[in-house]
Length: 484
Image (cartoon, rainbow, N blue to C red):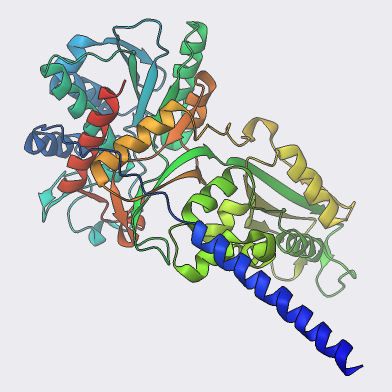
Protein backbone atom coordinates (compact mmCIF):
# COMPACT_ATOMS: atom_id res chain seq x y z
CA UNK A 1 0.00 0.00 0.00
CA UNK A 2 2.78 2.42 0.94
CA UNK A 3 4.54 1.68 -2.35
CA UNK A 4 1.37 2.34 -4.33
CA UNK A 5 0.82 5.62 -2.47
CA UNK A 6 4.41 6.67 -3.11
CA UNK A 7 4.09 5.90 -6.82
CA UNK A 8 0.84 7.85 -7.02
CA UNK A 9 2.40 10.81 -5.26
CA UNK A 10 5.42 10.71 -7.55
CA UNK A 11 3.09 10.49 -10.52
CA UNK A 12 1.13 13.54 -9.40
CA UNK A 13 4.36 15.39 -8.74
CA UNK A 14 5.55 14.50 -12.22
CA UNK A 15 2.34 15.83 -13.76
CA UNK A 16 2.70 19.02 -11.73
CA UNK A 17 6.30 19.50 -12.87
CA UNK A 18 5.33 18.92 -16.50
CA UNK A 19 2.47 21.42 -16.17
CA UNK A 20 4.79 24.02 -14.68
CA UNK A 21 7.22 23.46 -17.52
CA UNK A 22 4.48 23.88 -20.11
CA UNK A 23 3.26 27.09 -18.41
CA UNK A 24 6.79 28.47 -18.29
CA UNK A 25 7.62 27.59 -21.90
CA UNK A 26 4.35 29.06 -23.21
CA UNK A 27 4.91 32.24 -21.21
CA UNK A 28 8.49 32.69 -22.40
CA UNK A 29 7.39 32.18 -26.00
CA UNK A 30 4.53 34.64 -25.55
CA UNK A 31 6.56 37.77 -26.24
CA UNK A 32 5.68 41.10 -27.76
CA UNK A 33 6.64 41.46 -31.39
CA UNK A 34 8.08 44.98 -31.31
CA UNK A 35 8.71 46.05 -34.88
CA UNK A 36 12.08 47.64 -35.46
CA UNK A 37 11.91 47.71 -39.26
CA UNK A 38 10.18 51.10 -39.49
CA UNK A 39 12.34 54.18 -39.95
CA UNK A 40 11.50 57.36 -38.09
CA UNK A 41 9.57 59.89 -40.18
CA UNK A 42 9.20 63.66 -40.01
CA UNK A 43 7.37 65.60 -42.71
CA UNK A 44 8.89 68.97 -41.93
CA UNK A 45 5.63 70.90 -42.09
CA UNK A 46 5.23 74.33 -40.49
CA UNK A 47 3.87 73.46 -37.04
CA UNK A 48 3.42 77.09 -36.07
CA UNK A 49 1.14 77.65 -39.04
CA UNK A 50 -0.78 74.45 -38.31
CA UNK A 51 -1.24 75.54 -34.70
CA UNK A 52 -2.67 78.85 -35.84
CA UNK A 53 -5.02 77.10 -38.26
CA UNK A 54 -6.33 74.74 -35.58
CA UNK A 55 -6.83 77.72 -33.28
CA UNK A 56 -8.92 79.40 -35.97
CA UNK A 57 -10.83 76.18 -36.67
CA UNK A 58 -11.92 75.97 -33.03
CA UNK A 59 -13.42 79.45 -33.24
CA UNK A 60 -16.20 78.21 -35.54
CA UNK A 61 -18.99 77.09 -33.20
CA UNK A 62 -20.03 74.03 -35.18
CA UNK A 63 -22.30 72.74 -32.43
CA UNK A 64 -23.93 69.49 -33.57
CA UNK A 65 -27.22 70.51 -31.95
CA UNK A 66 -27.40 73.61 -34.18
CA UNK A 67 -26.78 72.19 -37.68
CA UNK A 68 -28.25 75.21 -39.45
CA UNK A 69 -25.80 77.65 -37.88
CA UNK A 70 -23.79 79.80 -40.28
CA UNK A 71 -20.58 78.48 -38.74
CA UNK A 72 -20.89 75.22 -40.68
CA UNK A 73 -20.69 76.74 -44.16
CA UNK A 74 -18.21 79.31 -42.86
CA UNK A 75 -15.98 76.50 -41.64
CA UNK A 76 -15.87 74.77 -45.02
CA UNK A 77 -15.10 78.15 -46.64
CA UNK A 78 -12.28 78.59 -44.12
CA UNK A 79 -10.76 75.24 -45.12
CA UNK A 80 -10.55 76.32 -48.76
CA UNK A 81 -8.82 79.54 -47.77
CA UNK A 82 -6.47 77.83 -45.29
CA UNK A 83 -5.35 75.04 -47.62
CA UNK A 84 -5.26 76.53 -51.14
CA UNK A 85 -2.85 73.91 -52.48
CA UNK A 86 -5.10 71.05 -51.46
CA UNK A 87 -8.26 72.55 -52.89
CA UNK A 88 -6.48 73.40 -56.14
CA UNK A 89 -5.34 69.78 -56.49
CA UNK A 90 -8.59 68.00 -55.62
CA UNK A 91 -12.08 67.63 -56.99
CA UNK A 92 -14.61 68.88 -54.42
CA UNK A 93 -18.20 67.77 -53.97
CA UNK A 94 -20.46 68.79 -51.11
CA UNK A 95 -22.44 65.94 -49.63
CA UNK A 96 -25.29 66.01 -47.11
CA UNK A 97 -24.92 67.83 -43.78
CA UNK A 98 -22.27 70.25 -45.09
CA UNK A 99 -19.85 67.38 -45.64
CA UNK A 100 -17.08 68.12 -48.17
CA UNK A 101 -15.73 65.15 -50.15
CA UNK A 102 -12.34 65.73 -51.76
CA UNK A 103 -10.72 63.47 -54.36
CA UNK A 104 -6.96 63.72 -54.90
CA UNK A 105 -6.38 61.87 -58.17
CA UNK A 106 -3.59 59.30 -58.06
CA UNK A 107 -1.21 58.40 -60.89
CA UNK A 108 -2.26 54.74 -61.12
CA UNK A 109 -5.98 54.30 -61.90
CA UNK A 110 -5.68 50.54 -61.41
CA UNK A 111 -5.11 50.94 -57.67
CA UNK A 112 -8.19 51.07 -55.44
CA UNK A 113 -8.50 54.46 -53.73
CA UNK A 114 -8.42 55.09 -49.99
CA UNK A 115 -10.27 57.56 -47.79
CA UNK A 116 -9.11 59.63 -44.80
CA UNK A 117 -11.96 60.94 -42.66
CA UNK A 118 -12.61 63.33 -39.81
CA UNK A 119 -15.57 65.37 -38.64
CA UNK A 120 -15.82 69.00 -37.66
CA UNK A 121 -19.12 69.16 -35.79
CA UNK A 122 -18.68 69.16 -32.01
CA UNK A 123 -20.73 68.30 -28.95
CA UNK A 124 -22.28 71.21 -27.08
CA UNK A 125 -20.83 72.66 -23.91
CA UNK A 126 -22.54 71.21 -20.84
CA UNK A 127 -24.93 73.74 -19.28
CA UNK A 128 -23.43 75.47 -16.26
CA UNK A 129 -19.86 74.32 -17.02
CA UNK A 130 -18.42 77.44 -18.65
CA UNK A 131 -16.87 78.69 -15.43
CA UNK A 132 -14.86 75.46 -15.17
CA UNK A 133 -13.07 76.00 -18.47
CA UNK A 134 -9.56 77.41 -18.10
CA UNK A 135 -10.05 79.13 -21.46
CA UNK A 136 -13.30 79.84 -23.34
CA UNK A 137 -14.26 76.71 -25.31
CA UNK A 138 -14.53 78.45 -28.67
CA UNK A 139 -11.69 80.95 -28.33
CA UNK A 140 -8.97 78.67 -29.70
CA UNK A 141 -6.48 79.88 -27.10
CA UNK A 142 -2.90 78.64 -27.50
CA UNK A 143 -1.23 78.46 -24.08
CA UNK A 144 1.11 76.23 -22.10
CA UNK A 145 1.93 74.12 -25.14
CA UNK A 146 -1.72 73.34 -25.94
CA UNK A 147 -4.47 74.47 -28.27
CA UNK A 148 -7.54 74.75 -26.04
CA UNK A 149 -11.16 74.39 -27.04
CA UNK A 150 -14.08 72.23 -28.06
CA UNK A 151 -13.16 70.00 -30.97
CA UNK A 152 -9.39 69.88 -30.52
CA UNK A 153 -9.51 66.17 -29.66
CA UNK A 154 -12.83 65.42 -31.29
CA UNK A 155 -12.15 65.87 -34.18
CA UNK A 156 -10.85 69.10 -35.71
CA UNK A 157 -7.32 68.32 -34.58
CA UNK A 158 -7.14 65.29 -36.89
CA UNK A 159 -8.80 67.22 -39.72
CA UNK A 160 -6.26 70.04 -39.57
CA UNK A 161 -3.40 67.55 -39.22
CA UNK A 162 -4.33 65.60 -42.36
CA UNK A 163 -4.91 68.69 -44.47
CA UNK A 164 -1.66 70.26 -43.21
CA UNK A 165 0.18 67.11 -44.27
CA UNK A 166 -1.48 67.08 -47.68
CA UNK A 167 -0.82 70.79 -48.22
CA UNK A 168 2.88 70.32 -47.46
CA UNK A 169 3.18 67.29 -49.74
CA UNK A 170 1.47 69.13 -52.60
CA UNK A 171 3.88 72.03 -52.17
CA UNK A 172 6.68 69.45 -52.48
CA UNK A 173 5.13 68.25 -55.80
CA UNK A 174 4.09 64.88 -54.36
CA UNK A 175 1.24 62.96 -55.97
CA UNK A 176 0.05 59.62 -54.59
CA UNK A 177 -0.06 56.52 -56.77
CA UNK A 178 -3.58 55.63 -55.64
CA UNK A 179 -6.31 58.25 -55.38
CA UNK A 180 -6.88 59.61 -51.89
CA UNK A 181 -10.28 60.84 -50.75
CA UNK A 182 -10.87 63.14 -47.80
CA UNK A 183 -14.28 63.30 -46.14
CA UNK A 184 -15.11 65.77 -43.37
CA UNK A 185 -18.43 64.95 -41.73
CA UNK A 186 -20.66 67.79 -40.59
CA UNK A 187 -22.95 65.75 -38.35
CA UNK A 188 -21.04 62.79 -36.87
CA UNK A 189 -22.18 63.60 -33.34
CA UNK A 190 -25.85 63.28 -34.28
CA UNK A 191 -25.90 60.29 -36.59
CA UNK A 192 -23.62 60.83 -39.56
CA UNK A 193 -25.92 61.58 -42.49
CA UNK A 194 -22.95 63.26 -44.14
CA UNK A 195 -20.78 60.15 -44.00
CA UNK A 196 -23.74 58.00 -45.03
CA UNK A 197 -24.24 60.17 -48.12
CA UNK A 198 -20.53 59.85 -48.98
CA UNK A 199 -20.72 56.05 -48.88
CA UNK A 200 -23.91 56.08 -50.96
CA UNK A 201 -22.28 58.41 -53.50
CA UNK A 202 -19.22 56.16 -53.82
CA UNK A 203 -21.44 53.10 -54.22
CA UNK A 204 -23.42 54.80 -56.96
CA UNK A 205 -20.19 55.70 -58.73
CA UNK A 206 -19.01 52.09 -58.53
CA UNK A 207 -16.03 53.08 -56.38
CA UNK A 208 -14.86 50.51 -53.84
CA UNK A 209 -12.24 51.82 -51.43
CA UNK A 210 -9.31 49.64 -50.38
CA UNK A 211 -9.62 51.05 -46.89
CA UNK A 212 -10.80 54.01 -44.87
CA UNK A 213 -9.38 55.60 -41.73
CA UNK A 214 -11.44 57.57 -39.22
CA UNK A 215 -11.39 58.34 -35.51
CA UNK A 216 -12.01 55.62 -32.95
CA UNK A 217 -9.07 55.36 -30.61
CA UNK A 218 -5.76 57.02 -29.72
CA UNK A 219 -2.24 56.11 -28.75
CA UNK A 220 -2.92 55.41 -25.07
CA UNK A 221 -0.21 56.16 -22.51
CA UNK A 222 -0.65 55.12 -18.86
CA UNK A 223 -4.30 54.41 -19.55
CA UNK A 224 -4.31 50.60 -19.42
CA UNK A 225 -3.13 49.33 -16.00
CA UNK A 226 -0.13 47.01 -16.09
CA UNK A 227 1.39 48.33 -19.30
CA UNK A 228 4.58 50.36 -19.30
CA UNK A 229 4.50 51.23 -23.02
CA UNK A 230 2.00 53.34 -24.97
CA UNK A 231 -0.56 51.33 -26.94
CA UNK A 232 -1.84 52.27 -30.38
CA UNK A 233 -5.20 50.54 -30.77
CA UNK A 234 -6.00 50.42 -34.49
CA UNK A 235 -9.63 49.45 -34.29
CA UNK A 236 -11.11 47.02 -36.79
CA UNK A 237 -14.79 47.40 -35.97
CA UNK A 238 -17.22 49.27 -33.79
CA UNK A 239 -20.07 48.10 -31.66
CA UNK A 240 -23.68 48.34 -32.66
CA UNK A 241 -26.51 50.03 -30.79
CA UNK A 242 -29.86 48.71 -29.56
CA UNK A 243 -32.27 50.36 -27.13
CA UNK A 244 -35.27 48.47 -25.81
CA UNK A 245 -38.14 49.54 -23.60
CA UNK A 246 -39.70 47.05 -21.21
CA UNK A 247 -43.38 47.83 -20.61
CA UNK A 248 -45.63 46.45 -17.88
CA UNK A 249 -49.31 47.43 -17.70
CA UNK A 250 -51.67 47.18 -14.72
CA UNK A 251 -55.06 48.44 -13.52
CA UNK A 252 -53.63 51.09 -11.23
CA UNK A 253 -55.42 52.27 -8.12
CA UNK A 254 -54.54 53.42 -4.63
CA UNK A 255 -51.27 52.36 -3.05
CA UNK A 256 -53.11 51.39 0.16
CA UNK A 257 -54.48 48.32 -1.66
CA UNK A 258 -51.58 47.09 -3.78
CA UNK A 259 -51.67 43.81 -5.71
CA UNK A 260 -49.09 41.16 -4.99
CA UNK A 261 -47.00 42.43 -7.93
CA UNK A 262 -47.29 46.04 -9.08
CA UNK A 263 -46.25 47.18 -12.55
CA UNK A 264 -43.20 48.83 -11.00
CA UNK A 265 -42.28 45.65 -9.15
CA UNK A 266 -42.66 43.60 -12.31
CA UNK A 267 -40.40 45.98 -14.23
CA UNK A 268 -37.85 46.09 -11.39
CA UNK A 269 -37.68 42.30 -11.37
CA UNK A 270 -37.22 42.22 -15.12
CA UNK A 271 -34.42 44.79 -15.05
CA UNK A 272 -32.69 42.84 -12.30
CA UNK A 273 -32.91 39.64 -14.32
CA UNK A 274 -31.53 41.28 -17.48
CA UNK A 275 -28.70 43.06 -15.69
CA UNK A 276 -27.66 39.92 -13.83
CA UNK A 277 -27.73 37.77 -16.97
CA UNK A 278 -25.13 39.43 -19.22
CA UNK A 279 -24.76 38.22 -22.76
CA UNK A 280 -22.06 35.68 -23.28
CA UNK A 281 -18.57 37.08 -23.77
CA UNK A 282 -15.39 35.42 -24.86
CA UNK A 283 -11.88 35.73 -26.16
CA UNK A 284 -12.74 35.17 -29.80
CA UNK A 285 -12.83 37.16 -33.02
CA UNK A 286 -11.70 40.78 -32.81
CA UNK A 287 -11.66 40.47 -29.00
CA UNK A 288 -9.14 37.65 -29.23
CA UNK A 289 -6.97 39.68 -31.62
CA UNK A 290 -6.98 42.63 -29.22
CA UNK A 291 -6.17 40.75 -26.05
CA UNK A 292 -3.65 38.42 -27.71
CA UNK A 293 -1.67 41.37 -29.04
CA UNK A 294 -2.08 43.39 -25.85
CA UNK A 295 -1.36 40.50 -23.48
CA UNK A 296 2.17 40.15 -24.84
CA UNK A 297 3.07 43.55 -23.40
CA UNK A 298 1.94 42.92 -19.82
CA UNK A 299 4.15 42.02 -16.90
CA UNK A 300 5.24 38.38 -16.50
CA UNK A 301 2.43 37.30 -14.17
CA UNK A 302 -0.30 38.62 -16.47
CA UNK A 303 1.46 37.29 -19.57
CA UNK A 304 1.34 33.83 -18.04
CA UNK A 305 -2.48 34.01 -17.98
CA UNK A 306 -2.80 35.10 -21.60
CA UNK A 307 -0.16 32.64 -22.78
CA UNK A 308 -1.93 29.70 -21.14
CA UNK A 309 -5.58 30.25 -21.87
CA UNK A 310 -6.05 26.48 -22.17
CA UNK A 311 -5.82 26.51 -18.36
CA UNK A 312 -6.61 30.04 -17.25
CA UNK A 313 -9.35 31.06 -19.70
CA UNK A 314 -12.18 31.02 -17.08
CA UNK A 315 -10.04 32.98 -14.61
CA UNK A 316 -8.97 35.43 -17.29
CA UNK A 317 -12.48 36.08 -18.57
CA UNK A 318 -13.77 36.58 -15.02
CA UNK A 319 -11.06 39.11 -14.29
CA UNK A 320 -11.60 40.98 -17.55
CA UNK A 321 -15.37 41.02 -16.94
CA UNK A 322 -14.92 42.76 -13.60
CA UNK A 323 -13.54 45.97 -15.13
CA UNK A 324 -15.89 48.11 -17.21
CA UNK A 325 -13.30 48.94 -19.88
CA UNK A 326 -12.25 45.35 -20.55
CA UNK A 327 -15.75 43.91 -20.07
CA UNK A 328 -16.91 46.15 -22.93
CA UNK A 329 -14.33 44.48 -25.16
CA UNK A 330 -15.55 40.98 -24.25
CA UNK A 331 -19.27 41.19 -24.89
CA UNK A 332 -22.41 43.10 -25.72
CA UNK A 333 -22.92 45.38 -22.74
CA UNK A 334 -26.20 45.91 -20.86
CA UNK A 335 -27.01 49.34 -19.43
CA UNK A 336 -30.40 50.13 -17.83
CA UNK A 337 -30.70 53.88 -18.19
CA UNK A 338 -34.29 55.06 -17.63
CA UNK A 339 -37.27 54.13 -15.44
CA UNK A 340 -40.82 55.44 -15.23
CA UNK A 341 -43.90 54.65 -13.16
CA UNK A 342 -46.52 56.63 -11.32
CA UNK A 343 -46.34 60.40 -11.04
CA UNK A 344 -47.47 60.29 -7.41
CA UNK A 345 -46.23 58.33 -4.39
CA UNK A 346 -49.64 56.94 -3.37
CA UNK A 347 -50.91 56.03 -6.83
CA UNK A 348 -50.32 52.66 -8.45
CA UNK A 349 -49.17 53.19 -12.06
CA UNK A 350 -51.16 51.81 -14.94
CA UNK A 351 -47.90 51.48 -16.81
CA UNK A 352 -44.26 51.15 -15.77
CA UNK A 353 -41.32 51.15 -18.17
CA UNK A 354 -37.59 50.61 -18.19
CA UNK A 355 -35.18 51.58 -20.96
CA UNK A 356 -32.07 49.47 -21.49
CA UNK A 357 -29.26 50.28 -23.90
CA UNK A 358 -27.14 47.51 -25.43
CA UNK A 359 -23.86 48.03 -27.29
CA UNK A 360 -23.66 45.11 -29.67
CA UNK A 361 -20.46 43.12 -29.97
CA UNK A 362 -19.73 41.95 -33.54
CA UNK A 363 -20.56 38.36 -32.54
CA UNK A 364 -24.16 39.36 -31.65
CA UNK A 365 -27.13 40.66 -33.62
CA UNK A 366 -30.08 42.71 -32.41
CA UNK A 367 -32.33 39.72 -33.02
CA UNK A 368 -30.14 37.56 -30.80
CA UNK A 369 -30.20 40.15 -28.00
CA UNK A 370 -34.01 40.50 -28.14
CA UNK A 371 -34.32 36.72 -27.83
CA UNK A 372 -31.92 36.77 -24.88
CA UNK A 373 -33.97 39.46 -23.12
CA UNK A 374 -37.22 37.53 -23.54
CA UNK A 375 -35.61 34.35 -22.22
CA UNK A 376 -34.07 35.86 -19.08
CA UNK A 377 -37.12 37.99 -18.21
CA UNK A 378 -39.40 34.96 -18.56
CA UNK A 379 -42.52 37.05 -18.07
CA UNK A 380 -45.25 37.14 -20.77
CA UNK A 381 -46.83 40.18 -19.11
CA UNK A 382 -43.90 42.37 -20.09
CA UNK A 383 -43.70 43.76 -23.61
CA UNK A 384 -40.29 44.26 -25.21
CA UNK A 385 -40.52 47.33 -27.44
CA UNK A 386 -37.88 48.72 -29.78
CA UNK A 387 -37.65 50.79 -32.94
CA UNK A 388 -36.20 48.68 -35.77
CA UNK A 389 -35.21 51.84 -37.63
CA UNK A 390 -33.02 52.91 -34.71
CA UNK A 391 -31.16 49.61 -34.45
CA UNK A 392 -27.55 49.67 -35.57
CA UNK A 393 -25.77 46.36 -35.93
CA UNK A 394 -22.05 46.12 -35.20
CA UNK A 395 -19.93 47.13 -38.17
CA UNK A 396 -17.98 44.64 -40.31
CA UNK A 397 -14.63 43.55 -38.88
CA UNK A 398 -11.70 44.80 -40.96
CA UNK A 399 -8.63 42.68 -41.63
CA UNK A 400 -5.55 43.12 -39.47
CA UNK A 401 -3.44 41.44 -42.16
CA UNK A 402 -4.44 43.67 -45.09
CA UNK A 403 -2.09 46.23 -46.61
CA UNK A 404 -4.14 49.10 -45.19
CA UNK A 405 -3.59 47.95 -41.62
CA UNK A 406 0.13 47.51 -42.30
CA UNK A 407 0.35 51.03 -43.76
CA UNK A 408 -1.44 52.55 -40.76
CA UNK A 409 0.61 50.58 -38.25
CA UNK A 410 3.90 51.42 -39.96
CA UNK A 411 2.96 55.10 -40.10
CA UNK A 412 2.10 55.09 -36.39
CA UNK A 413 5.39 53.42 -35.47
CA UNK A 414 7.40 55.75 -37.71
CA UNK A 415 6.15 58.68 -35.63
CA UNK A 416 5.71 57.23 -32.14
CA UNK A 417 8.65 54.82 -32.08
CA UNK A 418 8.75 51.36 -30.52
CA UNK A 419 5.30 51.24 -28.93
CA UNK A 420 2.69 48.51 -28.78
CA UNK A 421 0.29 48.42 -31.71
CA UNK A 422 -2.78 46.21 -31.52
CA UNK A 423 -5.99 45.62 -33.48
CA UNK A 424 -8.96 46.72 -31.38
CA UNK A 425 -12.68 47.41 -31.14
CA UNK A 426 -14.35 50.81 -30.86
CA UNK A 427 -17.06 50.67 -28.20
CA UNK A 428 -18.75 53.95 -29.23
CA UNK A 429 -20.11 55.17 -32.58
CA UNK A 430 -18.17 56.90 -35.37
CA UNK A 431 -18.71 57.81 -39.00
CA UNK A 432 -16.48 54.84 -39.90
CA UNK A 433 -19.49 52.51 -39.77
CA UNK A 434 -20.92 54.38 -42.76
CA UNK A 435 -17.66 54.52 -44.71
CA UNK A 436 -17.37 50.76 -44.20
CA UNK A 437 -20.28 50.37 -46.64
CA UNK A 438 -18.01 51.50 -49.48
CA UNK A 439 -14.74 49.98 -48.33
CA UNK A 440 -12.99 46.63 -48.08
CA UNK A 441 -11.68 47.59 -44.64
CA UNK A 442 -12.55 50.42 -42.26
CA UNK A 443 -9.98 51.33 -39.59
CA UNK A 444 -10.19 53.71 -36.65
CA UNK A 445 -7.48 55.64 -34.78
CA UNK A 446 -6.49 59.23 -34.07
CA UNK A 447 -2.71 59.72 -34.20
CA UNK A 448 -2.46 61.53 -30.87
CA UNK A 449 -0.87 60.41 -27.62
CA UNK A 450 -3.36 60.70 -24.75
CA UNK A 451 -3.03 59.97 -21.06
CA UNK A 452 -5.66 59.15 -18.47
CA UNK A 453 -6.23 62.84 -17.71
CA UNK A 454 -7.06 63.51 -21.35
CA UNK A 455 -9.88 60.95 -21.48
CA UNK A 456 -12.14 63.02 -19.23
CA UNK A 457 -11.63 66.02 -21.52
CA UNK A 458 -13.09 64.12 -24.45
CA UNK A 459 -16.65 65.54 -24.75
CA UNK A 460 -15.89 67.19 -21.40
CA UNK A 461 -14.47 70.31 -19.84
CA UNK A 462 -11.11 71.81 -20.85
CA UNK A 463 -10.73 69.83 -24.04
CA UNK A 464 -7.30 70.48 -25.51
CA UNK A 465 -4.64 69.13 -27.87
CA UNK A 466 -0.93 69.65 -27.35
CA UNK A 467 1.13 71.27 -30.07
CA UNK A 468 3.41 68.23 -29.87
CA UNK A 469 0.41 66.00 -30.63
CA UNK A 470 -0.59 68.15 -33.57
CA UNK A 471 2.91 67.70 -34.96
CA UNK A 472 2.70 63.94 -34.42
CA UNK A 473 -0.61 63.89 -36.27
CA UNK A 474 0.77 65.81 -39.24
CA UNK A 475 3.77 63.50 -39.44
CA UNK A 476 1.54 60.44 -39.22
CA UNK A 477 -0.70 61.54 -42.08
CA UNK A 478 2.36 62.54 -44.09
CA UNK A 479 3.87 59.08 -43.58
CA UNK A 480 0.55 57.40 -44.44
CA UNK A 481 -0.15 59.40 -47.57
CA UNK A 482 3.36 58.88 -48.96
CA UNK A 483 2.82 55.11 -48.65
CA UNK A 484 -0.07 55.32 -51.11
